[in-house]
Amino acid sequence: MPRQPRLDAPGLLQHVMARGIERRKLFLDDKDRQSFLDRLAVILEETQTQCYAWALIPNHFHILLRTGPTPVSKVMRRLMTGYAVTFNKRHKRAGHLFQNRYRSIICEEDPYLLELIRYIHLNPLRAKLIQNLNELDTYPWTGHSAILGHCKNPLVPGVRDHPGETKERRFHRAGESDVSKQKDQNPPAPLNRVPFQGVQLGCNPRNPCQKTSLAEKTIEDLLLHFGQTQKVARRRYREFVEKGIAQGRRPEFQGGGLVRSAGGKKAGLLGRSKEEREKGDTRVLGSGDFVTEALRQAGEEWEKSYRAKMPLEELTKAVASHFEIEEGDLKSPSKKKQVVEAKSAFGYLAIKKMGYSGREVGSFLNMRSYSAIRRAQEGQKVVDNRGDMCEILKIVE
Image: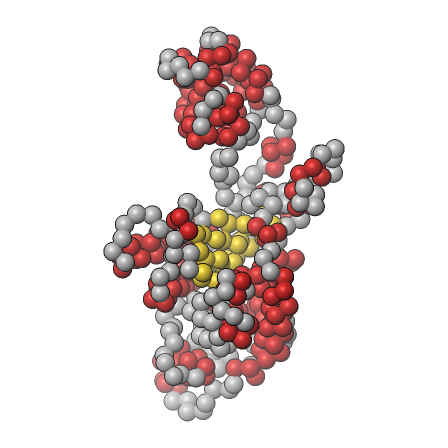
């Protein structure tokens, strides 16, 4: 079926996924992974996009974002295009690296924020890249270890691990240019003793002159869901993640809404009145009210997707009559200009105006689905150029 337009609005939580083309590996070694994270770190800071969770699997990645003023499409274009160019140059290859476009699902925050963070961070364990939670605690290619403080946060731009450094030294080095000016010889306090209460957000508690990065602030915001001090919050967060191991894969986190609200069965929707249906969308993970609000913020009118569809047989009669051709001509391989224009107009009206899928229209017209979609794209010009199609447009709209 034709791709739905992406939904986006500032402040929305989005679960973003992308795979390698033909399920090939996106990351061949640690240098690739670090290159991806370095690029992501800079883009997140520059666009003021928060990343609550991330996981790099050899042939795909997951990231959980809260969009800022920059649309997620621009964030992902910069990330994926830039990384693909670097990857191809480094590995002396050419062509596409990613399979199609990325997938993004808008998520309702209250019920899903923490669940998605846990789900994403457990991906390496489910993929058997590591064997247990203890290994995950120090695994560098997911955000879990940074939340626990066992690894530096790679989403802080310009900060890398140095072999043999302690956590305290890594933190100290991140702001040592300012600290050296102050000639402060006192060692920093242990990380797990820094209270959250009374700490001003956006300010480094050990060095007030240094601004806290967005990535650090995001982890701080996350830990506040679990406790008021880092020590307590990290312990409770780890316990929360541990409880999620037994849950395995969570297909319900792949979007949906309408079918999911019917117990996962489309048959459960039959017989419901329009008012009784919980509105849903494959691009949104959340309750019916949240779906409606998300679509409103994204500038879409949800009710259009519930409008009654004219049967394709009736549309055939209307289009054939308008173009003065036989109804059977629409299903024939004829290349006559009048027939070709009629097919294009039919595809545009059926797919773009009435919501039929390319597969449905292609099957009806005895052509492949991608040909029907191409016809629909060409059909808009045909319809726009023929001002006498107003009556048909009134019927389908």
